[in-house]
Image (cartoon, rainbow, N blue to C red):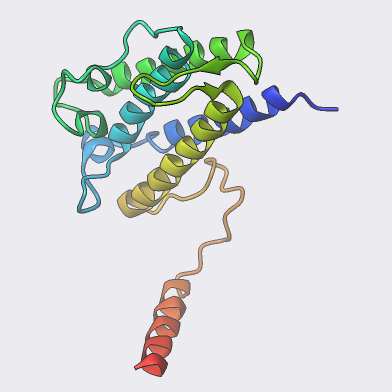
Length: 189
């Protein structure tokens, strides 16, 4: 029999690892540059999730993380958690994320899944189980964003550097998808 809390933590850790792997081997410019019209960038995703872990798996359970980012206290510009300033180093942002997740893992370890907390500013109490479910979804969502951004940078895809869970690259695939889209659009017009 497996431990439900440990299963949830493993799924969260898998997404954390994927997110950081997406930074490997890239230049400072590539980890910071916006690749969508809304500015999505790899280092900004890491910075954002650092704050989310500090908030949801720290402050919400009366376990503040020493280094909770300013964007959660209202002392920062809007969306400042979604990009890295030139004076913020990749190493500091990544190490801050690792520290936040270690703090979050301590919270997970010491509390039961039915422990109740309250996200600052939220109207109702929530359980650790619900928060963990939320953080898994949030982190996997942003790992998916990172996957797309990394593919736009250099074509690298997948959950891990070994390419597991990814079909072999087929240069004709995108063309087939485009043709199917055009054909479907023509049928509907």
